[in-house]
Length: 336
Figure (cartoon, rainbow, N blue to C red):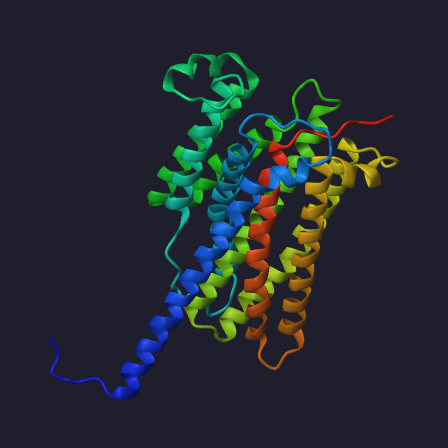
């Protein structure tokens, strides 16, 4: 209890801050819900008029893969942004509260649900009796699904330990498992496809999670020169990450859709339509990143780059959701 009564100005300022914080929370929740609707409502639009048939439960699987990708990106981004923050001269020691344990829990549940689909022969289980847990050990996809479940469990334990940096190993296992799962042994040059996917996923996780964590750190620091320096460090690395994402994405698309058919397949197949939507979203993200970079270098207040950077985070969230949907749709036909 205090005997000092707050002045009206202080009370008003506190109320305004609370309203602003509540408004931001509501806005984030709305955007998260809208992002979740992409894999849930996207399959009918992508498949309409293509003559293709989707696997059972494609919407749910797309949503689960979205959660899995986001769950890997958040802790990876925290480790990445934390490393950059330590390179900022005179940076405050404060760090935002880690979201890694929550991300690991979400990833564990998503991976467990995906493993149950694999255990029923890639069908959506309607009862526990349909799930053949032992069958997971007898197939390549089953072993990879179990690897992801265990990797997120270990990542969560590492996040709660005194050495959270050890999360890098189970997170790497998740990326490797996803890269191998996306390219079965029956595919032409599967190891090349897995290598491209592994680089693509790693760079995407660092880009998305790193920007989110950098903005959270900047907010914790209260801006200032240290915050601008952190954004500058991130922007320089992000250019390399974008180049790697673009190169591996183009190579992967050309492996799935030969150059002479790619234009037609971008509009006549579900995979191509979703890929086109992803490309357009990445283009928006690249423009926002360019605007933020120009403000960092030329604006009187470098921290004005935070506005396009926040928009970039939400656009990247949409990219993650579209990517989750992309993994659940039927692959395009390699026309001759």
